[in-house]
Length: 361
Image 1 (cartoon, rainbow, N blue to C red):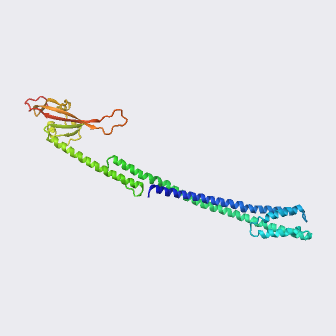
Image 2 (image 1 turned 120 degrees about the vertical axis):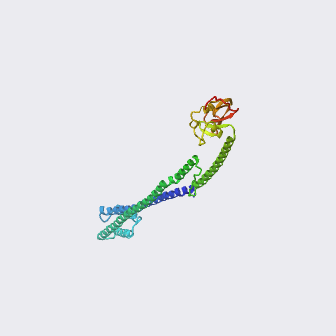
Image 3 (image 1 turned 180 degrees about the horizontal axis):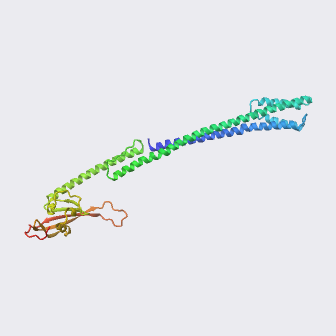
C-alpha cells in the first residue's frame, strides 16, 4: 500500500470521526433546543392562559361584566389553539361549556355559580396536565442531555484513540525507514557495499530499498573491478621492478615504502621481511647510503657508492608521484590539477666497481 493511500485512509478516518462527532453534536443540540422551544413553551403559555381565566373569576362577581366576559373568552380562545397534552382537549371543552353556563343570561345565579365551580375544576385539570408535562419533558431533556453526553464522550474517546495511535505510530512509520536508509547510506559511505535495506511495507520505501540495494550491488561490482585492475597493475609493476637491473625504491609523501625491488634491498642490505607501509628510516636505520640516495639531485651521475668494500659509480633518478585532484574544493580561488604523493628513486650502475671505497655504507 502506498504512503499516500495510507495517509488518505488515516486522515480520512479521522475526518469521518470528526464529522460524525459534529453531526451528532448538532443533532442533539437542535433536538434539545427545538423540544424546549416548542413543547415547554406551549405548556408555559397554557399555564398563562389558565391563570388569566382564573384571575377573571377571582376578581369579578357573578354575573360577569362584559369586559370580564371578553377577557375570559379571549384567554379561552388562546387555550383552545394551544392544546398539546392528552386530556387537555376534553378539559378545555368542559371549560368552554362551563363558560357558556356562566354567561347564560337565562340561568339562575346558583346555576352560574355551579358552572363557575366546574370551570375552576377544569382549569385545575388543565394546569395539572401541563405541570405534569413540564416535569416529564424536563426529565426527557435531562435524559437526552445524558444520552448526548454519553455518545459524544464515546466519540471523543474513539477520536482520542485514533489520535493516540497516529501520534505513536505515524512518526515511526516515516522516521524508522528514513533512519534505516540513513544508516545504509552511512555504510555505503564507509565502502561497505554489502549493506542492504529490506522493507516489507509495499510502499515507496520498499521501492527505495530496491533501488538502494541495486546501487550497492553496482558499486560493489565496480569496486571489485577497480580492485582487480589495481591489483593486476600492481603485480605487473612488481614484476617489472624485479626484472629491472637498477634498484627501485618508491616512497609516499610520508616517506613510507610503497614498493622496493630485490636489487634495492640488496643495495640497502635489507632482509626479506614485508616492509610495505613502513617508514623507510625505520626499516633502514643509520644508513649513509640511503641518505645519499634521498638527498641526491635528479639525474645525478657519477655518485660513488660503496658496496661490500668496493666503490662504484651510480646514476640516481628521481620521479615525483603526482596524483590528480579529481575533486577540487569549489570555493578555492586557485585549484590545482594534482598534488604530490611521493617519490620514486631509481639507482642505476654506470661503471664497474673500483677496488677502493669512497663512501662507506
